[in-house]
Length: 470
Image 1 (tube, rainbow, N blue to C red):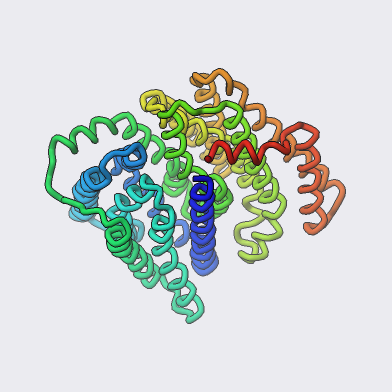
Image 2: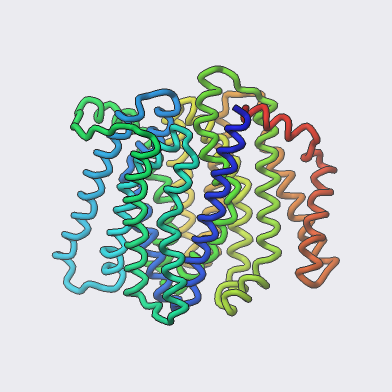
């Protein structure tokens, strides 16, 4: 079992690294090959489509993972979800297309919405196969499913850039081609690897039952979708596409830097579900896992801030580095809170506390939206980043107050200590050295020293984490 967990984790990490490298390549080609206005418009369209299709899942995607992991019939559950995405996906795109009749002058943003929307619809249709593979803990299969689109898009865009034909028209074609390729691969690979027979016979009772069960999670998805991209959409419409280009660049790098969280998060849902069902939760193991996550989160935040301006300005020819220094600093302060919130959310989700989770996301959304509306007009991108930080902080406080495992009431202590250690090490390293090659290693060494002093690194941690994953 331990070997299986380690193998699954390794596969997931490799997939994430490959996907993030490919995503970074896509982002680099677009950000440097297009002007800021066009780049901002593409990101605005992607933000709208991502939020829309996330909402259309109704939270069934995560429920599918949980049910299959708990032993439900994978064929039946997957078939129901396939029916859902087919109906909701085509109805949504049909409405989007029909809206063209009521828009007298079609601008470039709407045209991009229609065209890129074709590809994102294909990605949405492939989601049942991915969620089923996740629930079955077939992480190798899931890894291949998740990289196909980015492989096509990344190498396609690189070829366009090298042959000097990187136009908006050709970029859209590459995007659609990558997404269609992912759908076809998911369909064929899932059927071949799992041997699961999928019946598309309409079952009103089963679909209604699943939909009813997903209602609390639907609210969560609705709110998280708005939360994740409201700032992008607000900046794009209320400020400018240029400012969105700058903010989206910083936010994209910030998202990529959460790779360790993305690596472990898919593994925690089935693992927590099984341990809670079997009543095998060990508080000491949970504390160790949280402390390890906080150490990683604060270290990544530290390194990102130190390397940001010199590295980003060098690779983007001065377009996105210095101008985003304050924005990236505020965003990286969110990182430990994201880890802690995901950890607590996973426990509560495995416990079935969906209504409480919904309430937490309602509060978080209100804080973020109000923060964006108040701060973005005055502080622009920095205001959006600070609103997101405030939302993460409020969500963490709420989750901690609702925690029923009294033995882990103080798991926020590592968060505070690790953030403090990172801030001190970065500040002292910059005082001692003037160049990146001096500041970078000095900050890492100082960070580790401070962690030992604060008793955040312990020799028994590795063994405790292994016991939890066993």
